[in-house]
Amino acid sequence: DAKTTQPNSMESNEEEPVHLPCNHSTISGTDYIHWYRQLPSQGPEYVIHGLTSNVNNRMASLAIAEDRKSSTLILHRATLRDAAVYYCILRANTGNQFYFGTGTSLTVIP
Amino acid sequence: NAGVTQTPKFQVLKTGQSMTLQCAQDMNHNSMYWYRQDPGMGLRLIYYSASEGTTDKGEVPNGYNVSRLNKREFSLRLESAAPSQTSVYFCASTWAAGASSGNTIYFGEGSWLTVV
Image (cartoon, rainbow over all chains, first blue to last red; front, side):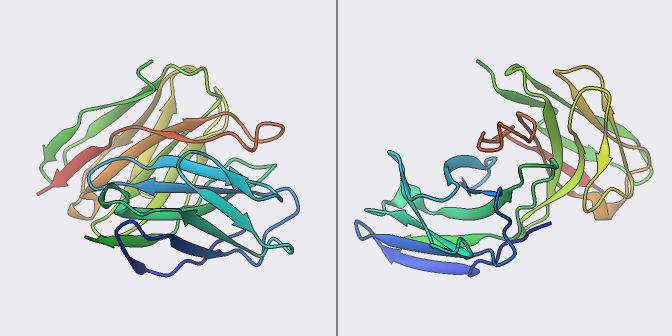
């Protein structure tokens, strides 16, 4: 199963943009790229997902490399409430397993 | 909608005791999952059920059993609890793979289990 690699931790100043990278060099052509985040003492929650094209929603933007071997989650203006662990995962078009890895712990500095 | 509901939220067990974690979803999802999360770690897949009537092992199935009771419910059983099973357990659900591969995964709020 395709796996992802993320930095263990990142810091950002409040109200500045944050770029969270993810490498997925073994991605297959039909794998969707999903991002979730986990606030302290809560279950993970959906942030955004995409297949090939860049995606925007009210929470964030997802930039996908042309070769799809990496992606970047972009938080346009970090707030203190964005401090969480961010997980990048791949959802295969076949099979039903989801592997989360250890994610990136984002600290937002006031 | 309640989404994904897990019970109990907190439980303390003695080594060797058994217990069942219950999970129910009201979104008519095909697939359901059980994960565990140890302190400071990511989520590890214990078991999953792609559809009603099927279950499969994930990364860390030893010491656990599961039952997909019906489309809504997926339970996780610890037959003889061990301190190494102290963890936070999350249930999740989603549509099955295939045409719906873009669909998102919904998680419960977690069950905090301590084995002493």
